[in-house]
Image (cartoon, rainbow, N blue to C red; front, side, top):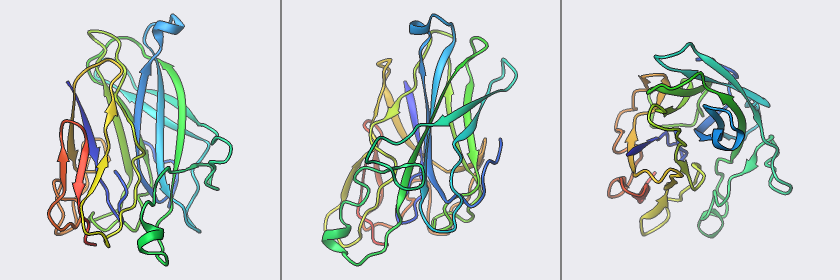
Length: 256
């Protein structure tokens, strides 16, 4: 069974080594990998995708065209792989090198036509790498300074840290991948709870379990919540913040 850790970091509402930029206003992201050795004929050949979400605003540092993903394990020395930005499809550019997040603001126009909301763009980076062999605890990780300063539920706003793990001792493995973008805005002027899916697909047909986790700023280094927030209740709601562990669906009615 694979467990998807949803590292939540909510401002208005936005999800979720080496520092590579400053004042980037990063809002979240994910790392996933795909085994391609069966098609390339190269053992331990994996392709890595890094997705980064950032708030678009004047004065914030843009994201580079490349980043470094670190690969660590207890079996081998650290590997570094350079991932390169994928150009946005025609008509989907967000103006900062990323793409416009699909269906990011579903309720702004109809409920709050004069509202100012945070614009979030999605940036995708990819590269392939050959791992040195088998190990039970490969860790693909990436870090960036700094988190979006408008986040209100964390005590501090240090680095954004992402990781994905791999055990290939039994067989080659491909990680789960979230189906929907991890950035979304939700209006408080609604009378019923939102139902938001963060489900994933699992190419190897393994079972999945979803769980909330405290955000990290580095490996095994959690960030303290601001007073009034917890891992199980990371935002202000009317009747609680609920996650279905079987399908990754959130249920909540925001009040702030």
